[in-house]
Image 1 (cartoon, rainbow, N blue to C red):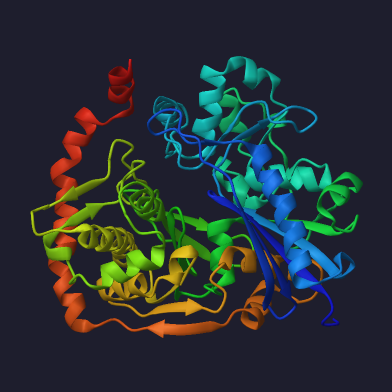
Image 2 (image 1 turned 60 degrees about the vertical axis):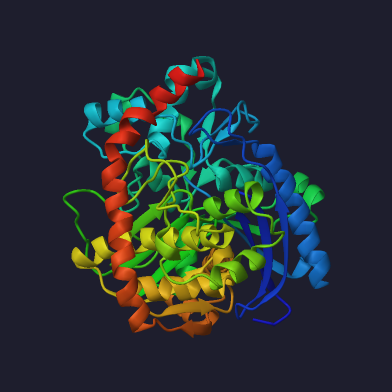
Amino acid sequence: MPSSQYLLGVDVGTEGCKALLFNTEGKSLARSYNRYPVIVPEPSWAEQDPLLWWDGVRKSIREVAKKAHVSVENIVCVSLTGQSPVLVAVDGRGKPIMNAIIWMDRRAVEETKRIMEVTGLKEDPSMMLPKIMWVKEHRRNIFRKTHRFLQATDFVGYRLTGKFATDPLTASTIHFDAKKGKWPYETLSKLEIPVEKLPNVLFPTKSAETVSKEASRQTGLREGTPVVLAGIDAYMAMVGVNALEPGHICEITGTSTCIMVPSHQKIRDPETRVVCSPFPLVPDLWITWGIMSSTGASLKWYHDNLSCKESYSELDAEAAEIPPGSDGLIFLPYLMGERSPIWDTSARGVFAGLSLNHTHKHFARAILEGCAFGIRHNLEIIGELGGEINEIWTCGGAAKSRIFGQIKADILGKPIIIPKEIEAPALGSIIIGAVNVGIYKNLTKAAESMVRAECTIAPQESMHKKYGRFYRMYKDLYLSLKEYFKRYCGDQVGREAKG
């Protein structure tokens, strides 16, 4: 295919929208980023205005094409990825009828319990079924008016194409069976959720809608350009670092952290601390994943509210001055509760061991270490269950931090590989798109051809041993506070305090 043809990746993230333009070899030529806010109306609630996503997408697409000096006629595919699970209730014209309830929202605790009682499914308040049930129970008029329950990429896809659709990875958050191509009709019936309120599911390497005339006018894209709904950002990150074989782990840290561990067989956890799901885009591949709610968000919270530094690089420089273990200061990164491996909606962020010798520099390092301890906690469990962990490919915004990379290498005792393209979800999405439009024969070949490493950060054995003690302190701290969190920090307690 001529080198004058390009692929556009759009990532609808939590803090903003990214658009990156790539050539057919996976090299990024230009990028654009537009922010939008997270709305927190109650403790553990998190919402966004879907129209701000679309505004960010429109701006980002126009900006990136202008920066690259590329004709839209040469953009052969637009691939979408983004945050999930996210509930977007829309009417028949695709208009949002309430704010989106995003992935970090934890309001649906009681609905989660009811789903588990009625269906026997293991659920979490962050997932889609509890969100839909919450709307059904607490916003009955909206539930009645909802034509489709979409997610972030589905909504942007609708604005680009005028069609209601989703992908099998995003649909899996509502227990879609990709192998059979079916929604869970029995489960939905028990919960009195009409399946008609869910979108059609398109397989991203095979099916695509196209840019509509109206979307062409708003974005500048060529009408008729294929639009591929690639899948959830964490899965696309895995594709974007070519973590498609056992031993090659993907860790993506932005607002949250996702850890993706591939295997050729299902890894079972009787305690359901981590989850293993089939990866429908590659035959006989399973992904065991752990996901932490507010890692990057913890550092952002500290930067925005307590730090006197203007940039994150300045925080990195301060953290580098402090010895491993932060002189005994331990941080639990549970500012919005926590998902794997503890699955505790009541958990909260904590600094422990504070004394007069600690400075703001210690806080910066303790946050980075606390996030890395959480990654180790997940990987330790996956390893014990039989997952193969040889090297960790790290991506997302946090991959810019070399001190964080070294801290992760030392705490995990594994090499950290930084790819040339750290915006791996966008790259992963266009790798999917490249297969869809026939540039590459299959996903494995496309990833091998388009992913490259920038550098490797090796673990320091002496530091790894030293961190063992601080890691035990990290785990013990949560266990010591678990009942306190349950008694004083639960959602019901928070509502009573507010009332």
